[in-house]
Every structure is written in C-alpha cells, then in structure tokens.
Image (tube, rainbow, N blue to C red; front, side, top):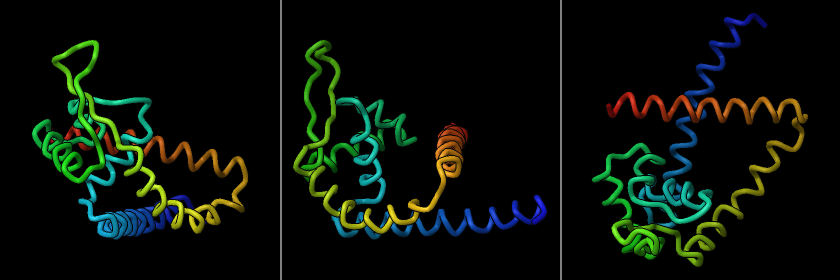
Amino acid sequence: MAHADLLAQLEVESRRYLAAYVLFNQAVADKLGLHPTDLQCLNLLTIESGPVTTSQIAELTGLTSGSASRLVERLVKAGYVTRQQDGRDRRRVLVQPVPEAVRRIGAVWDDLGKDWEGIFADYTEAELAVLVRHMRRTTELSRAQVRRLRG
C-alpha cells in the first residue's frame, strides 16, 4: 500500500481511536463517580514516584493552576487523595493518592485490562517497540499542543 494511502488510513483510525478512548474514559469515570479529568489525574498520580504539588498536577494535566486546585479539592472531598504539608518546606502542600481508593480504581481496570492484554499478545517485540515509540511521541506532542493552546 502506498505511503499516502497509509497516512490517510492512519488519520481516520487515529480519530476513531481518540474518540473511542475519550468515550471509554468517560464510561470508566461514570462507573467510579468521577469526572473524566479527575480519573486521568489519578492515573497520572499513580505513576509518579511520590507525592506531588498542585503546581505539578497542573503541569501533568495541562490545566491552569486554578483548575488544578479545584480538581484536587474534588479528589480530596471524594476521598481519592490527601493533602499534607511538605516536611522540608512548610509552604508547600503535597498531594498523594489514597491507597484504598487506588485499589478500588485498580479493581475496575484489572477487570477491563484482561481484554486489553489480548490485543498485544500477538505483536512481535519490534512491533511493540514501535507502539511504545509512537505513544511516547504522541504524548510529547499532545503536551506541547496543550501548552500552545493554553499559552
């Protein structure tokens, strides 16, 4: 198949993929009683190496500092995260997920994840490497585009 034809197919499938993921994320968030952005913030917090500040949450999510503060407030109120003063700098407040809440979310993902694992079972290591590279590059581009749109 010609390069141009593949690019055209990729454009269509990318649009379908993004829409499907947004709708899937909404369905998972609805099941958990969360806003979709809150769910993705929790997702990002669970892959961080430790507690983060609200400013770091704004950077991770592309939200304004005010929106990130409101997001954290919703998550605290719902019992998904806690806030505590940084022991090294009393002016900073650190946010971290509540382990039990993360386990509840994890149980939903674990149930759904079995089907996702099957998608990747027949890919070669080289194909998986291409997918990882693609995901990293699109994540970087998306972050840059969010900064551009908000700047």
